[in-house]
Amino acid sequence: MATRRVLILGAAGRDFHNFNTVYRDNPDYQVVAFTATQIPDIAGRRYPAELAGKLYPNGIPIFDESELTEVIKREKPDVAVFSYSDVTHETVMHLASQCIALGVDFELLGADKTMIKSKVPVIAITAVRTGAGKSQTTRYISNILKGLGKKVVAIRHPMPYGDLAKQACQRFADYSDLDKHKCTIEEREEYEPHIDNGFVIYSGVDYEQIIRNAEKEADVILWDGGNNDLPFYACDLHIVIADPLRPGHESIYHPGEANFRRADVIVINKCDSAKELDIKGIEAAAAKLNPKAVVIRANSPVSCAKPEMIKGKNVLVIEDGPTLTHGSMTYGAGVVAAKNCGAARIVDPLPYAVASIAATYRKYPNAQGILPAMGYGDAQVKDLEKTIDATPCDVVLSATPIDITRVLKVNKPMIRATYDLAEVKPGQLKGEVEKALKVLAHV
Image (spheres, rainbow, N blue to C red):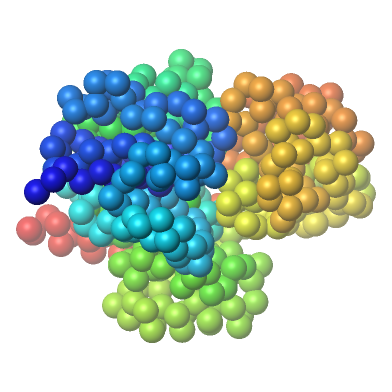
């Protein structure tokens, strides 16, 4: 058979993993290029030779997805492999139609094909959409495991925004590691909560290398998923978070629906701020699409460090960036906290947004009225600071998963809102974790 030419459509995460597990060092395929979207400053680079393997001594070019037609005409791939997450089924099929019209096969890899097997138990936490509550659930499960006397190591879905070769396998145990690896705000949002909880966390690009290192220091590995992507590892317990503030999304987004169908446990989060009708709608969807899954309701209580600083004040709210961008939410925990604390007004930062922050609003108009914590590089962090400094408000309320004052220096007082997971019927998740570990102990 002739070598098959492959174009991988990605967003600096799942695409690299698919390449590493299916195509690297495989002479049956020649990967001619990656395309990139969602994440800024990825296009125009190369997947480095150090990671690409012996068949790619010059690495592999990465182009912006907007150039897809031109890339296909120039590189003449036989197949385009879709390899990123948190997009509607309609979006996937529009891309498929674009490729098929140009004479190129369009392919999605099966879930099991790219899942690496671990030597220790793996509990995976994924979601149907970005911003559903994976982080707080991961913290909750890690504390359950700690209470059971297990040594836990978390592995986070890739966030490779810097030097890809240097980021092949990263280990974070304290804040100095975040500085050493020059982590962006988005990376810190995912890594700091684990460090605060006393756990080691790994991330990077080469997830075979990562799992083999993590296994050496873990009784249980906790897969902390990104966006609504599928796990990179074969898991012994798969917990999927559904969001009743976006009812119906569990069946119209890729690969969130696949997660929903594969889940052992479905946690319906944010029940304290959702309509009962929408919660029941997700329960009905679970009964139809995945009747074997255990369905658990949970709340997402929000707390504010200094509520007296919010009451009666004009407040600028900062929310987790991906939740507002490709997660398509119009608000998050910060808005909930501001209203609960009696804010007089939530100030719209849009008129004062500069450079890349203004560009974010143009691309994601749903985020208008609140400020997404965009910080994919030093320049964007500076744009975020300038936007905050220019916005007329009394106080800034940040509801990102980190203490953002470690990164930002602004001219206004800034306080933090935090959020956790609280089961409506306590003990259910602990029971499912214990059951899974008990089964594994007898295998």
